[in-house]
Length: 67
Image (cartoon, rainbow, N blue to C red; front, top):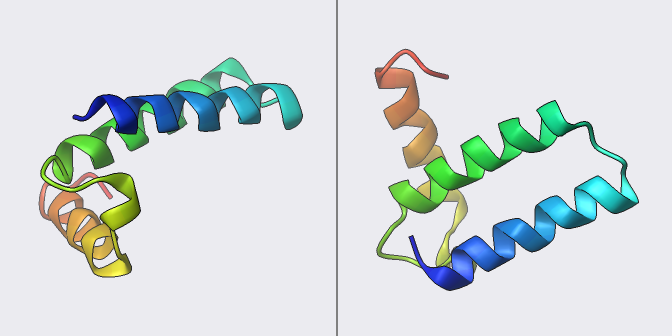
């Protein structure tokens, strides 16, 4: 997981917390899912991810019974 990826997730969650007043549970769920995405796409930056990468992650989660 890259430092830039973590910083982007932190900035996104901070915006959700302050602009949208997201609940702590929502923020925790988003962080969990985004951390999983960063781990799944460890060799790519967030900017380099494309829709097929997201679909591949969802397929992998479905294969584990998690989506």
